[in-house]
Amino acid sequence: METYRPFFELNRIQNEINRLFDHVAGLRGSEDPVGSWIPNVDVYEAGSDLVVKIELAGVDPKTVRLAANGSHLILRGEKAQIEPQPGFRYHCLERGFGAFKRVIMLGMPINTHQARAELKDGVLRVTFPKVPNRRGEEVAIPIKEIA
Picture (cartoon, rainbow, N blue to C red):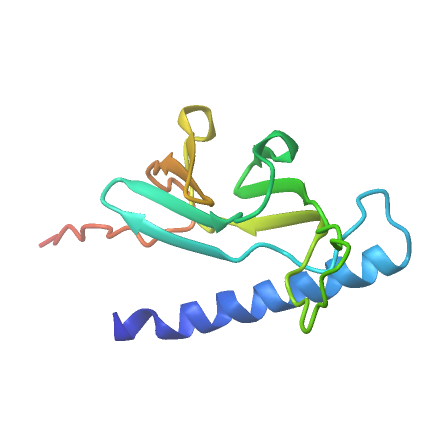
Protein backbone atom coordinates (compact mmCIF):
# COMPACT_ATOMS: atom_id res chain seq x y z
CA MET A 1 0.00 0.00 0.00
CA GLU A 2 2.95 2.30 0.64
CA THR A 3 3.75 2.50 -3.10
CA TYR A 4 0.37 4.13 -3.78
CA ARG A 5 0.71 6.86 -1.14
CA PRO A 6 1.96 9.51 -3.62
CA PHE A 7 -1.04 8.79 -5.86
CA PHE A 8 -3.43 9.15 -2.93
CA GLU A 9 -1.82 12.46 -2.03
CA LEU A 10 -2.04 13.69 -5.65
CA ASN A 11 -5.69 12.63 -5.77
CA ARG A 12 -6.38 14.48 -2.51
CA ILE A 13 -4.71 17.63 -3.85
CA GLN A 14 -6.70 17.36 -7.11
CA ASN A 15 -9.93 17.03 -5.13
CA GLU A 16 -9.08 20.12 -3.08
CA ILE A 17 -8.32 22.07 -6.27
CA ASN A 18 -11.64 20.90 -7.75
CA ARG A 19 -13.44 22.06 -4.60
CA LEU A 20 -11.72 25.46 -4.82
CA PHE A 21 -12.68 25.92 -8.48
CA ASP A 22 -16.24 24.73 -7.81
CA HIS A 23 -16.48 27.24 -4.95
CA VAL A 24 -15.16 30.10 -7.10
CA ALA A 25 -17.53 29.15 -9.94
CA GLY A 26 -20.42 29.21 -7.47
CA LEU A 27 -19.46 32.69 -6.29
CA ARG A 28 -19.52 33.94 -9.88
CA GLY A 29 -23.03 32.64 -10.50
CA SER A 30 -22.41 29.64 -12.72
CA GLU A 31 -25.41 27.71 -14.03
CA ASP A 32 -24.66 24.89 -11.55
CA PRO A 33 -24.74 26.60 -8.16
CA VAL A 34 -22.42 25.20 -5.54
CA GLY A 35 -23.40 25.02 -1.90
CA SER A 36 -21.21 25.22 1.15
CA TRP A 37 -20.25 21.56 1.02
CA ILE A 38 -19.18 18.86 -1.40
CA PRO A 39 -19.58 15.15 -0.60
CA ASN A 40 -16.45 13.18 0.34
CA VAL A 41 -15.34 10.42 -2.04
CA ASP A 42 -13.27 7.22 -1.93
CA VAL A 43 -12.11 5.56 -5.18
CA TYR A 44 -10.47 2.13 -5.14
CA GLU A 45 -10.00 -1.05 -7.14
CA ALA A 46 -11.62 -4.28 -5.97
CA GLY A 47 -10.69 -7.22 -8.18
CA SER A 48 -11.97 -6.54 -11.69
CA ASP A 49 -14.00 -3.48 -10.59
CA LEU A 50 -13.37 0.17 -9.86
CA VAL A 51 -15.47 1.29 -6.89
CA VAL A 52 -16.47 4.84 -5.96
CA LYS A 53 -18.05 5.52 -2.56
CA ILE A 54 -19.63 8.89 -1.88
CA GLU A 55 -20.94 10.14 1.48
CA LEU A 56 -24.48 11.48 1.04
CA ALA A 57 -25.82 11.46 4.59
CA GLY A 58 -28.84 13.74 4.87
CA VAL A 59 -29.30 14.07 1.09
CA ASP A 60 -32.73 13.22 -0.33
CA PRO A 61 -32.07 10.45 -2.91
CA LYS A 62 -34.67 12.04 -5.22
CA THR A 63 -32.34 15.04 -5.71
CA VAL A 64 -29.29 12.97 -6.71
CA ARG A 65 -28.29 12.67 -10.38
CA LEU A 66 -25.39 10.51 -11.47
CA ALA A 67 -23.73 10.31 -14.90
CA ALA A 68 -20.51 9.04 -16.44
CA ASN A 69 -18.66 10.86 -19.20
CA GLY A 70 -15.51 9.12 -20.40
CA SER A 71 -13.31 8.66 -17.35
CA HIS A 72 -15.31 11.12 -15.20
CA LEU A 73 -18.17 10.42 -12.82
CA ILE A 74 -20.50 13.41 -12.42
CA LEU A 75 -22.66 13.70 -9.30
CA ARG A 76 -25.25 16.42 -8.73
CA GLY A 77 -27.76 16.86 -5.95
CA GLU A 78 -28.96 18.99 -3.11
CA LYS A 79 -28.88 18.71 0.65
CA ALA A 80 -31.71 20.60 2.30
CA GLN A 81 -30.97 23.23 4.91
CA ILE A 82 -32.32 22.44 8.36
CA GLU A 83 -35.15 24.65 9.46
CA PRO A 84 -34.60 26.28 12.86
CA GLN A 85 -37.21 25.06 15.32
CA PRO A 86 -39.04 27.58 17.49
CA GLY A 87 -37.87 27.42 21.08
CA PHE A 88 -34.53 25.77 20.22
CA ARG A 89 -31.25 27.52 21.06
CA TYR A 90 -28.60 26.46 18.59
CA HIS A 91 -25.01 26.46 19.82
CA CYS A 92 -23.31 25.12 16.70
CA LEU A 93 -24.48 24.55 13.12
CA GLU A 94 -21.60 23.15 11.07
CA ARG A 95 -23.28 20.69 8.71
CA GLY A 96 -23.19 21.95 5.15
CA PHE A 97 -26.16 22.19 2.85
CA GLY A 98 -27.13 23.36 -0.60
CA ALA A 99 -26.79 22.26 -4.19
CA PHE A 100 -23.62 20.42 -5.11
CA LYS A 101 -21.81 19.15 -8.16
CA ARG A 102 -18.85 16.82 -7.93
CA VAL A 103 -16.79 15.59 -10.88
CA ILE A 104 -14.66 12.60 -9.96
CA MET A 105 -11.72 11.62 -12.16
CA LEU A 106 -11.66 7.82 -12.37
CA GLY A 107 -8.19 7.59 -13.90
CA MET A 108 -8.57 4.28 -15.74
CA PRO A 109 -10.63 2.79 -18.55
CA ILE A 110 -13.98 1.54 -17.28
CA ASN A 111 -17.20 0.19 -18.75
CA THR A 112 -19.71 2.97 -18.12
CA HIS A 113 -22.58 0.99 -19.67
CA GLN A 114 -22.36 -1.70 -16.99
CA ALA A 115 -22.10 0.64 -14.00
CA ARG A 116 -24.09 -0.24 -10.90
CA ALA A 117 -25.11 2.25 -8.20
CA GLU A 118 -26.53 1.50 -4.74
CA LEU A 119 -27.39 3.88 -1.91
CA LYS A 120 -27.26 2.40 1.59
CA ASP A 121 -26.87 4.07 4.99
CA GLY A 122 -26.09 7.45 3.41
CA VAL A 123 -23.27 6.08 1.22
CA LEU A 124 -23.62 5.85 -2.55
CA ARG A 125 -21.55 3.00 -3.99
CA VAL A 126 -20.90 3.07 -7.74
CA THR A 127 -19.16 0.06 -9.29
CA PHE A 128 -17.63 0.01 -12.77
CA PRO A 129 -16.11 -3.04 -14.46
CA LYS A 130 -12.53 -2.24 -15.50
CA VAL A 131 -11.56 -2.71 -19.15
CA PRO A 132 -8.09 -3.40 -20.51
CA ASN A 133 -6.13 -0.25 -21.27
CA ARG A 134 -5.27 -0.41 -24.94
CA ARG A 135 -3.42 2.91 -24.94
CA GLY A 136 -0.90 4.38 -22.60
CA GLU A 137 0.29 1.27 -20.82
CA GLU A 138 3.70 -0.29 -21.10
CA VAL A 139 3.71 -3.31 -23.39
CA ALA A 140 6.71 -5.63 -23.60
CA ILE A 141 8.04 -6.14 -27.12
CA PRO A 142 9.86 -9.44 -27.61
CA ILE A 143 13.29 -9.19 -29.21
CA LYS A 144 14.07 -11.71 -31.88
CA GLU A 145 17.74 -12.63 -31.99
CA ILE A 146 19.14 -12.81 -35.53
CA ALA A 147 22.36 -14.65 -36.21
